[in-house]
Image 1 (cartoon, one colour):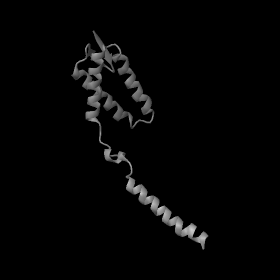
Image 2 (cartoon, rainbow, N blue to C red; image 1 turned 45 degrees about the vertical axis):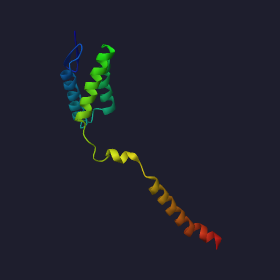
Image 3 (cartoon, rainbow, N blue to C red; image 1 turned 135 degrees about the vertical axis):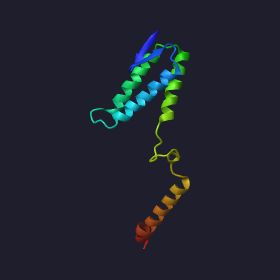
Image 4 (cartoon, rainbow, N blue to C red; image 1 turned 90 degrees about the vertical axis):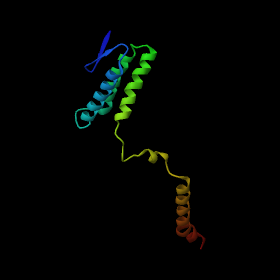
Length: 119
């Protein structure tokens, strides 16, 4: 039995090399679609994932898990690092900086507003 997604023929159960090739193809399509004005990326990605989902639903649970492990693993492997948003930047602001900012605001308010009202 063989199924096709975006021109790729898959054996059942899917072979890792076939799944990796599909993931690389989807990434290449996405990279090309970024620069096209006539494509909405969200809809484009959803359409890709829908075709994958429809195929995977025909597989048994173990085959489905293996397919997604290969597919998602390859997409993560070839993903670009985002220099503008590094992982350590997601940690948020430290408590010390928040306390320091609040102390600065209190200091400014005291000398501009409250001290003028008291005198």
